[in-house]
Every structure is written in C-alpha cells, then in structure tokens.
Length: 103
Image: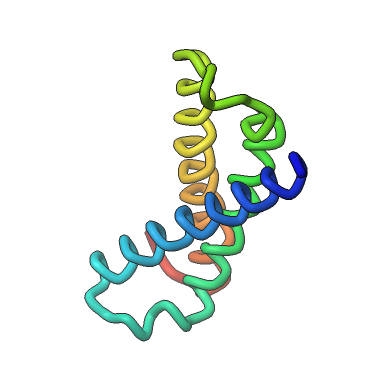
C-alpha cells in the first residue's frame, strides 16, 4: 500500500512539474503548437529526468510530509531549483548547439 501511494504521489508530482513547465512555455512563446516541437519535448524529458534523479538523491519521497521540517522544505526547494538550472545548462549545451543557434 505504501509503495502504491508513493507511486501515485510521484506521478502527480511529475504531472504538476510538466504542466507548470508547459504553461510557462506557452505563456513565454504565445504559441500552443510549440508544445509539439522537438525542442520542447526534449526539454520536458530532460526536466523530468533531472527532477527524478535529484529527488532520488535527496530521498524526497521517503519523507513523511506530515512531520516534515524546514530541512525537508529546503531539500524540495533545492530539487526544483537544481532541476531547472540543470535543464537550462543542458538546453544551452545540447539543444541550441544541435540547432546551430548562437546565444
């Protein structure tokens, strides 16, 4: 039962991350169709990979949130910030270089 609950929490968490990333992408680019382009799909996939790895590294899903303290909140904040920062670096290095874009 506990592992099923963790898995559901994990899925909901990833849907929220992807949803917020997609919404941000649409707001910044003013075009819904960009969500189906290669760059967005690669970026979204990398974001989930980075987020899952940082969450596993800091054991975010092993925390009992009812008894969480400020350290657990800071860990979660670090996971989100580190995931987006790593995605930003990967986007510059891989996606922009693949397309031959200048920064």
